[in-house]
Amino acid sequence: MTTVTVPPNRVFDPVQCARADTFAEWRTLVSDSFVPLEVRSDATEFQGTLRSRVLDELSIVEVTANGHQVLRTPALISRSDRHYFKLNLQLSGHGILIQDNREAHLRPGDLAVYDTHRPYTLAFEQNFRTLVLMFPHEALDLPVESVGQLTARRMAGDAGLGRMISPFMVQLAENLEALSGTTGHRLAYNAVDLVATMFESELSIRREPVAGTHGDLLTSIRQYIEAELGDPELSPAGIAAAHFISTRQLHKVFHEADTTVSSWIRARRLERCRRDLRDPILTDRSVGVISARWGLLDPAHFSRIFRTAFGEPPSTYRRG
Image (cartoon, rainbow, N blue to C red; front, side, top):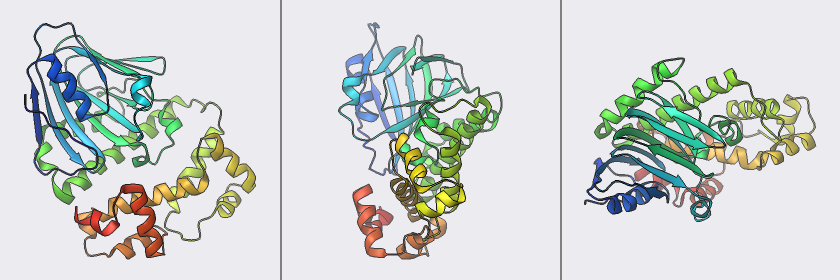
């Protein structure tokens, strides 16, 4: 077996390929390549292959294997600090995704999302091929609890936005070698943005309330923040006034979503800065210009919070 570990903070130019010729090898390979997983199979003979492209904390992995099950258990979740979403595109064969008391039956072309921070099961009875796009929660400009309404729900590849996004994802699977350098980074995050658009469309169709939160108000506020990130004067008081609520009510809404206004603004600004630092179109702009574009005017402060969030200074990250 050629085993490749693909940690989420490394950038590889070549496509990483790994093959397992026994189930024991596959069990190790799968957990090393994604998040820790329990893997089960009754097969006496087993083969599986992973083709991976890792760009910062975003992983794109094509999985081809014999039928088996993978489980994300509470014990395994407790060992992980980072929270990721995984989007599956079924390329061939059939799969079943179970999470949050829902079950999605996936046919070729279908998409489904799940959260690595909550238990899930993926089962494939026969040989299959699937594409997995794994990205951190903060890569989306959608509330985690809103995306939680979509976990383990089949998003058909032949209906709605799936008719456009599913073929695009298929092309990613067929052209992993093209996702190299800063251009590949931009293209990969464009895929995440497309996925977010599909999620927004699905949420608007379902129109389910977010349990335990002021769901509609929270969504409206976060959309407002996203549009105003570049304003250095963006503040809780201004946000509250724009929505005709008190700052106390604003803080309560975010508290119910297990976050704060300030941390949400900071996380979104840092995510926008991180993307810009790897954007080939913006190579002529300095780190200071990029941070100022997103409302972070103090270079020293920006460097400090960027390093805390991503493990290295923005200048070093840009050269990576």
